[in-house]
Image 1 (spheres, rainbow, N blue to C red):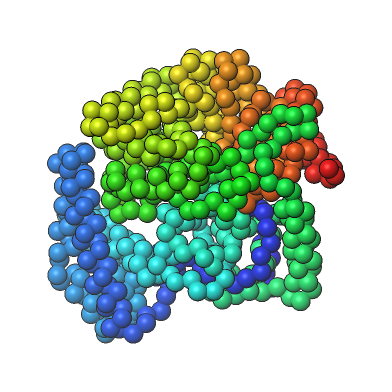
Image 2 (image 1 turned 90 degrees about the vertical axis):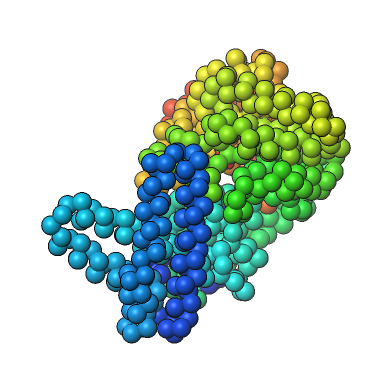
Length: 575
Ligand code: PEP
Ligand code: MG
């Protein structure tokens, strides 16, 4: 039995078996299947890399010019070096190595040869060969070994060093029962996905990749962050008791009747769900529509830019399924930890402070307009809103609105029907937006606070970095004061205010948010019963007073304890 302690990021208990995500290191450690099969994998990898480089060459040429594209051309030339790659084929056949091992072995041999050369220029050329070999291994990692192509035919908990948004988008989710990762933060996209699926997730479980093997029994406690591999009988029994208790508690919340949600003193609170595709919403009668449609996930599923028609079909389907309820489409929020190969975005030292969301869209008007047109077309006959992410200046918001207006005009001229009055709002998730919120207010039809990013930018703590996990906490006074300020400004300028970050579903945070004049919470669907139950037992007047007191407090731990106790006591209330 081995025990690991990480950060419990998505509630729940699960008893299942391990499926490990294969990393380049895992692929390299793998023993060879039969030589013919390894050769087949190798040839597939070569074709894939050839295509990938070809695509990258044209994009780089268009976006960054000839000099930048030359490097890709060098890689293409290396890929045509028959002698080098024949050596790899030979190692697969003669030495019975796995294809990744054979690539690595040939690369190492080549390094030795180049390091003995006298010419410094030639020695440096080896770096290009290494880069091509690494790319090839990574392409093979995207192949049959990768999560995206593994057929998951029984319940599993995925164990990984990290899960990228692309991993989470592409993997088969039917039998997915939970995640454990060594790195990644509380609002990483794997965690957001876990919450959306209602399955537990633990991050920061150091050492688990080394200890876990495919098929091992695993106990995952996403509430406390505990993970046990190969548990003994006593541990299993204790775990099953906790599972049972949690199941009984959720039954209590599920018995709550459907319909609109009001606080005890009659304040209507809208509770919507977060979505990233047009899949049916199971709890549609329990919610007020989709409060955040993360549109980037559809882009991540594609190998190239989606057409206006594909976007339109997806958006229209989401609108149709929502019926009369609202759907808030957030425009493309790519960048940060969400990379898109085909966009040819440059590698960044500091991606969360870099080229992201509207910063990219405003530089690529054609791409942005394609999306805006699709949303506008889908607005016909529905209750559609548009939301711009990562706004950090007034100019950005005005420019986004200008683009929207020009798309409306275009569609009008083309005789395409769309709603003229689609409300356009913005995410409040950067400190700069918070500081100029009064200036932004006249141009925003609504504000939606992205607490995931707001926390990382206010605390200067990367949301995915476990080393700063303690600082990445929305209960710090700095973040709470920002929220309080956002609430008073929104109220002063009569701008409707919602919260769509993960804090909106944190029961300890909700009373504070209502006390900051938040009118709508947009949350992961599985959280609907509990959040509805809580809000119906809250008193808006009391929450306002509570928020006023909380922002005077100094200690994050005391704040958390006070708010947790308040929420727990409220949940204990009967009717
Ligand atoms: C947020 O930042 O809180 C948010 C909702 O956006 P995302 O998590 O997609 O960055
Ligand atoms: Mg965000």
